[in-house]
Amino acid sequence: MQKILVLDFGGQYNQLIARRVREQNIYAEIKPYNRITSAQIKDEGYSGIIFTGGPNSVYDPASPHYDSEILDLGIPILGICYGCQLIAYMANGKVSSAENSSEYGKTELNVFEGLLFDGVPKTSVCWMSHRDFISEPPEGFKVTANTANCPVAAMSDDKRKIYGVQFHPEVAHTEYGKNMLNNFLFNICGCTGDWRMDTFAANKISEYRERLGGKRVLCALSGGVDSSVAAVLLHKAVGDDLTCVFVDHGLLRKGEAESVERIFRDTFRMNLIRVDARERFLSKLSGVTEPEKKRKIIGEEFIRVFEEEAKKIGRVNYLVQGTIYPDVIESGLGDASTIKSHHNVGGLPSVVDFEEIIEPLRNLFKDEVCRVGLELGIPEELVWRQPFPGPGLAIRCIGNITAEKLELLREADAIFREEVQSSGLGREASQYFAVLTDTLSVGVMGDSRTYGRTVVLRSVTTDDFMTADWTRLPYEVLERASSRITNEVRGVTRVVYDVTSKPPATVEWE
Ligand code: XMP
Image 1 (cartoon, rainbow, N blue to C red):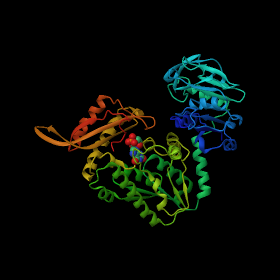
Image 2 (cartoon, rainbow, N blue to C red; image 1 turned 60 degrees about the horizontal axis):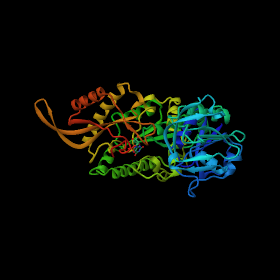
Image 3 (cartoon, rainbow, N blue to C red; image 1 turned 120 degrees about the vertical axis):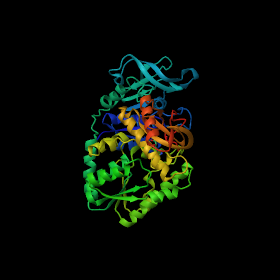
């Protein structure tokens, strides 16, 4: 299988670059620049290398540098933004810094020539984001594009197949960015697009069947996409040797626990243990109002419940985890500050007696996991399910959590989701849900005064959930949701819509 290396110099678009490559059915992996040497790169047999951008200046001694031998490995290279400046620096060109030459945003690009620009018009729009610029290309490089403020917007050394662009072809704002990347991948690196999800699933199933068959395999199923796809894949490989444990903490959405049971036990006929831990979580959470404390309690209690179940099962050979590629990349770099402690099943290994962790999805992005899920026959409604946080409704039920509040929230949330779904907005609304506040307000119903709760409707539109915009939902959808919630859910007198983006807010309220 052909593969492209995305050599990460700290740019904000590293994952986007890898996804753009994979969209062309070419396998790409991201490696931090300081975790792989040029000798290792050579041994790995990459078809091409992309240097990412980065926030630094190449002359800053603290900035990421790389062994210049990489330029002579004979592997095609495309440097983007900082990556392009780094190539210039390594090959003895000149990088300069001047206040008036910085460019941010959409910029007109003039293309002169070159393989990278096959099929790209002479002038088009590109996305720039830089202060430093290349003032003199290195020897052997010719300038292949410029902009008003940037004399070397692109350069190439065709003999060594080394290319650099100052702008960001991976960003949708660069009109012909996709053409340029495709020219690099197919024409320059010679990739053919041999990375496909159907063969991925079939290969994994036969690999695991051979390697794990006859041994005991355990999986914690949350009902989310990642653990569901991992579980079904393993089930296809080892059948009844797999046991899935589903902890019902009582913080799921309306009908969700039943749907997990129906899909996995009845449709897929998997060995499923559903642990009813609703009371247990509720009593642990009683009186707790602080969001981080809620998250910690749920994470820890989840592990305790799972541990008890695992003990009943006894020693297992393998523990399956639904780790996906972004988790791997983020833990690899590990410098993001913690805004919320995300709860997932990462804490499980220490409490289960097992030999090895199996992570069938660790090289896949979310959309690829979904495609594998569909290949495996998992219903669309589960595969395209919007993300749902591990701590569940606990972080959407502001303040103290009680069974009554949860029930009220579940009903309001189900109505809102139903209305958005039936509005035909599709995936324009990436994630939408209700939040129950502790704010009471006065209302009127018939001739009587009411005094009840306030429900917040939240819907965000986003590609990656790192930043998100509030969805411009049609008024009719909001109106129907509001009227149904106040009519059908007793105890709610007021419905409001959250018009805050992320940042400054986060998607979830707690
Ligand atoms: P925030 O609120 O951080 O959410 O803007 C970003 C995305 O992450 C989801 N989220 C979580 N997912 N465990 C998860 O698995 C968690 O603890 C958690 N907290 C937030 C959130 O729903 C949104 O999609």
